[in-house]
Image (cartoon, rainbow, N blue to C red):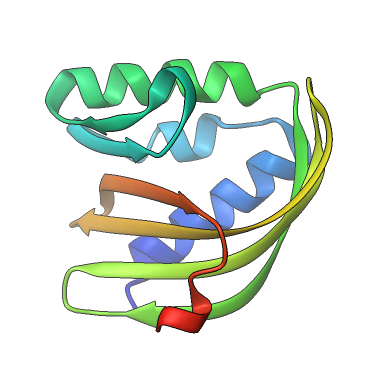
Length: 124
C-alpha cells in the first residue's frame, strides 16, 4: 500500500462528506493527470490542463455530498485502485453507484487520478 495514495483516498472521501477539497488539492503535482468518463470533464487531461480540469470538476462537486464505502483496494507498483459504493445527493438528486478510483503518486504528491463509474469489481 502506498501511504500517499491512501492519504489521497481518505482526503477524497472526506471531501465528499464535508465539501472541503483543500487537503486533496494541496497534494496535486503541477503536471497532474485527470481522467473522467462523462460530462464536461470527459476524457484524459494531462499537464497543467489536467490540473485545471480537475479544479473545475471539484468546484462543480463542492456543494454535493456523498459517502464512499470501500469494497475493494488493489495496489500495484504504479497505481492504487479503490472500488467503492458511492451514495449521496447532488444537483440532479440522490444517487447510488459503484465507482473505481485510481490514484498514482510521485513522492508525497498525487500525480494522477482516474475515475470510472459502474461496477468493475466483477472484472477484477
